[in-house]
Amino acid sequence: MHHLLAGSQIRLTYLQDRRALAGIDWPSIFDDLLDAGTPVNRWQWCDLDRLTHVVLAADRGTGRYAGVLGLTSRATPPEQCLMIGIAFARPEESGGTLPRAMLAHALARIVCLDGKPVAIAATHGYRSALSDLSQKIRSATLHPPADGNVIAFRAARMARQIGVGRTVLDLRPVTEASLLRDLRGLHGVRPERTKLAAPESPMAKLARSAAATRRPRKATRTGRSG
Image 1: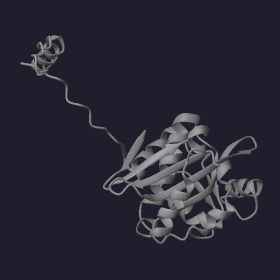
Image 2: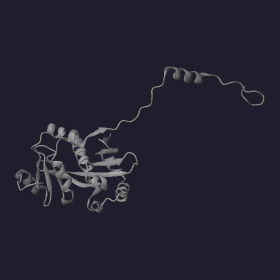
Image 3: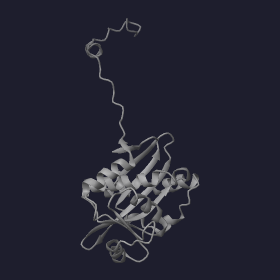
Image 4: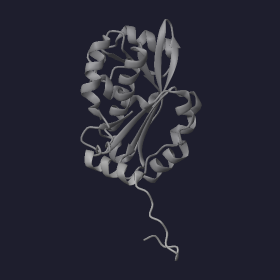
């Protein structure tokens, strides 16, 4: 199902099925983002085939891609965490709500389908998206901290388990209900509704039925119907 970002014409599409992920047209995505002036050179360091969750953002008016987010599920004892593998938005959207909305939308869908992950991790290049999200989720802790020198030791310990140089948003202190409430208020999306065909009136049905059962007129000697 597609969702529309509130107050915009941006359509968000969440993909998790392996066949759907394999069918993503990555060249078109990167071409659209490059044409918009997005520096997407970091994608070369990402193994696109290993992504397990993807959110595509497209402009409903032009059909061109406005952003993309890719996450990979990783096993961290004793539970699963998510790693941001790729996150890009066109320049006019990169400093706004789109990166945060894509991440919030993906996390909300994952929580609903698979349950709450223990954490989200990112490399240095994607730290800003994770830091922005952390300020909107109550009880979540970020390591390294976004502001100040107060270190959350449980988050720091998890960061060491995941790998050196990672920014980690620890979701263990957050209840699933509270997380979903914050995410739904954050990304502000609504399901995209498709227009349904107008129901056929009884008179139209009667006329169509009569036309279907009407016998053809006999042909004249000239071959014309009269």
